[in-house]
Length: 182
Image (cartoon, rainbow, N blue to C red; front, top):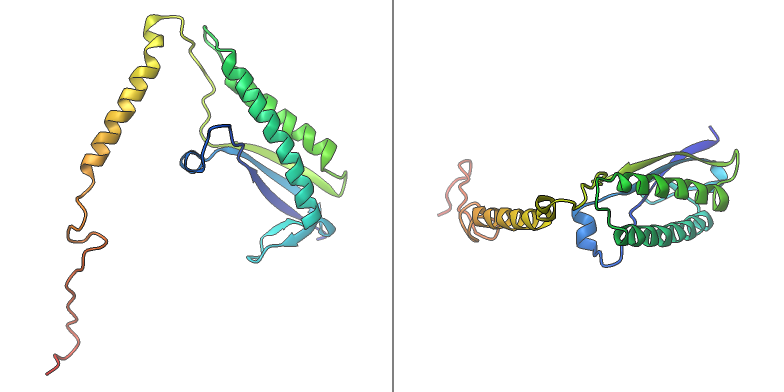
């Protein structure tokens, strides 16, 4: 075969979001491409990837997408809905359409390098109830208090350091098949 599949993942980083938050809640877009051999190299583990010049080109597309995603997310946050809304689902749909369009215009080569699939991965809230009642307005406060309480309970369940069987505590070992030394 003169073509191979290449998978690529984008995790859009929002302003104020750190690496730890990204690790705890990995999300983003998995893309799958099919490309002819002239576009492909392999990394040290033998995993197919784009050749250097195409990786650089794809990185420029990703930078443009991240700018759009950041702008779109900030705009959506400013336009708080007061009634029920599926706006977040629409935002994800818009972002995915923009990504596909950007790839088609800036990166893909017809019949040489094609986009096969884009998958949304991670945890995304797609429905927002709004804040049109007093009870709904309390939801964020109640959620934060519940999370803090759960974190306290989890911390209380952690065993104290240096307990038997815990890392950092030596455990006596017995080797029954060895003869005692004199």
